Image 1 (tube, one colour):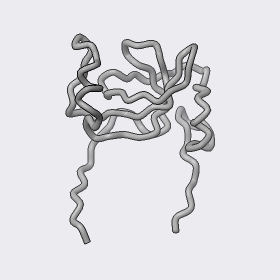
Image 2 (tube, helix red, strand yellow; image 1 turned 180 degrees about the vertical axis):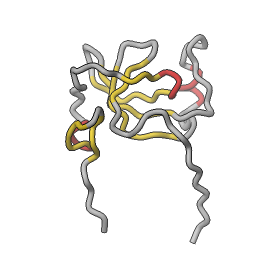
Image 3 (tube, rainbow, N blue to C red; image 1 turned 135 degrees about the vertical axis):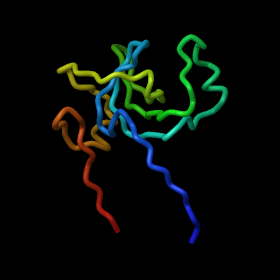
Image 4 (tube, rainbow, N blue to C red; image 1 turned 90 degrees about the vertical axis):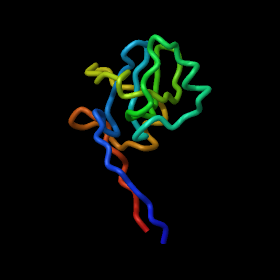
Length: 114
């Protein structure tokens, strides 16, 4: 059996939370979290230096949307805010991982364990 070191990381946002970007015009639903930056250096350097986040913080995978398109976004914790809009996100992938909206967040679909 391999020894896998797992570290608990405190995050500001939970899976299923509805968030919006601090600077850019999009919002979304969190579906995964990396404890720290886990993308390419090319992607990281493509972010304008004025808003480029530090790497040693949680980064979130979002079902993202704006007024024109649905897509997947990868965003640092420092660049996210809670979105308290009453208009829920409509990204079509939400229904594949979440069953319903309750207590301010989308609730993950129950999965069978083998």
